Image (cartoon, rainbow, N blue to C red; front, side, top):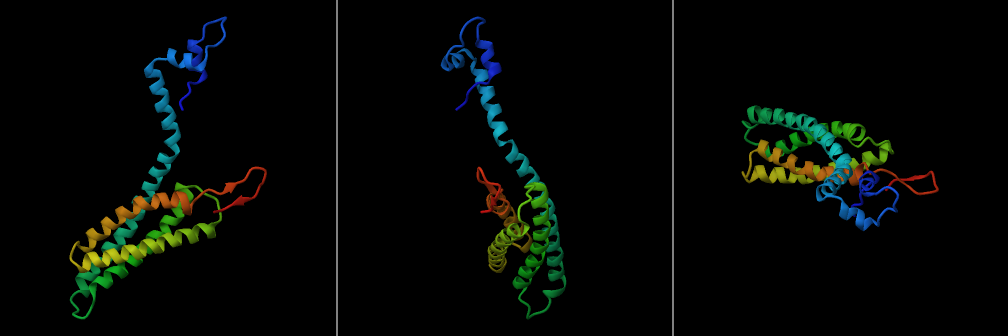
Length: 196
């Protein structure tokens, strides 16, 4: 619930009188003052999340450049040199290219998300294991969808990879924030941190 601050309340207070009840104070404020204060309150509440999300997107663009750039390089090599061989399963080669490019992006992303986006100092091993679990899940589902999209001819190798990266980026932010880089819980009266 929105409550006006002291500066707003002081405008409605008359000298030498007791302050009116809070209901009277709010009714004396203009609708625009109340609305402005509500907006300020909401912006202040969400500002840290927006800042963190913009940093996440910045690291994401760099990770995308590494991951997708390597994937394009490998795709070009596969299309130019290997597809001419009759017995090669090219869909499997695109999956291998995806594994190599994703692993490179994974290492870059873990370091920068940990130190720049979420700025956590928790236990490195726990965060790395959580990040690795998410990476393996992304890699499994991503490779499966990539393989099916290329094998069925639904999308080209490059479009399938780009679409896949867009979808995983949106999901990953919430998982990173609430699971991988979750801040430790400090119980009152103790100095021990509990990592969930």
